[in-house]
Image 1 (cartoon, rainbow, N blue to C red):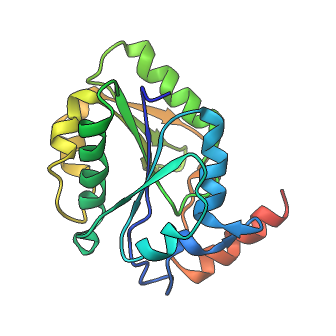
Image 2 (cartoon, one colour; image 1 turned 30 degrees about the horizontal axis):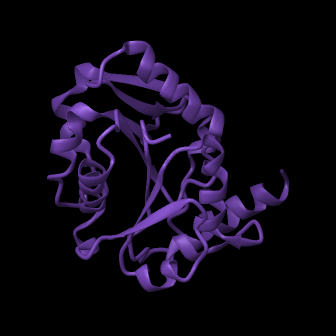
Length: 202
């Protein structure tokens, strides 16, 4: 269960959206509650990194998950990754890797995450990095990092996420392709409206 925890990045202020994306209405509940419920199917430890929205997230019933507060959320995504991975290093000694997901990609499928995990174990190395990709050229989150990179991930500090690690270790990257529409994110009210329309037609 704890071999590859799921780290959901939900700490940002979401300035373009105008409100916390984690708290947006989604599928009869909030977006973060909906995602945690979905990922619970994988029977893994789910860690949610909070920030400006910590007080509000703490009031929700995020079944089977733990909220980790990033006090330096203004530093960007890299710091949120660092806070989450540091928790894993200190508390989940058996972890062989970590899934890094963003709260604003609601259509990432369970089958895609399972395929990423299968690819990770098929390489048989904790130094593997599995990166999501699509036929339209997308490359990025969700990403699965092997435990070899925990120390480097825990030292990230800025808003570039883990790009520096990916560039430095590009030979260790394997791309896992999935439907581009499943990787769409919602940074603006317009994209939120578009993806909610998609949800209503499923």
